[in-house]
Amino acid sequence: MFQLLASLLLVVLAATAQANEEARARAVIDALLDWNIPLAEQRLSAWEASGDSEAHTLALYRAVIVVAHADYMPSRDAAKYDRPLAKLAAAIVQSERYLVDHPDDFSARLARATAQAISGRLLMEQGHWLKAWQAGKASRNVIRALLQERPDFADGYLIMGMFEYFTATVPGVLRWLVALMDFSGDRALGIDYLERSVAAARVAAPQAADALLLEVKYADAEACRYVPLGRLMTKTYPRNPRYVGALRRLRAQCDRADPERRLKPGRFVLATPGH
Image (cartoon, rainbow, N blue to C red; front, side):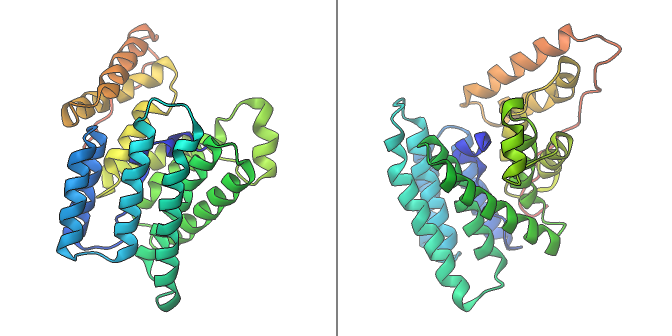
């Protein structure tokens, strides 16, 4: 259900209009997407030293890098997520402390919701289904409320897109449970949200592209639309071999699709901070 949140690449943090903070956040995300954790750590250290952001923002990014280390481990032992969960819990506490005095702060609310969303995925990895559901639902509800306040906040559509897509595409035998848990989704809406995030999210654009390439499952005719996105991501993040594989798969699907049913290739450009 939270499959995409398995990736550290799914963190959303464009909660302010400060171009400098957005640029620093995007720089960390870019390093993680390019499979370069040491560079991400260097960039986060420089960001922390600058004093440009609140503690809850930096705490979330520190947690994300710890999640990255765990996700890249070859071990299948779910205990590897104990430390990341502790870091995420600390990030949530940081946000909640800030919210005591600033209850309407958009950035702190988003940071808390993002940490909850990632925690939900890690809890699922460890088999704690009820806790995972509670964390995931809490995150979704906050993001939904934030988007009602600021519909133009494109970065928020990343998490909503993931929720809509994955809850709409669970195996049929589980759909009754998903509906019972108030997690029913809409596949087409989820994909639309992700595409919107690619085009307009100043920080989350590459994570949304990552989702469209690596997590969404397409019919052969649909795949044709995303071949240009595959080319864009392989060029932008050459160290990440998963994009090469995704592009190869999409091309193969498109080639075997009925020519009359193929979707027109999309025009994808990753949004950037300040635009």
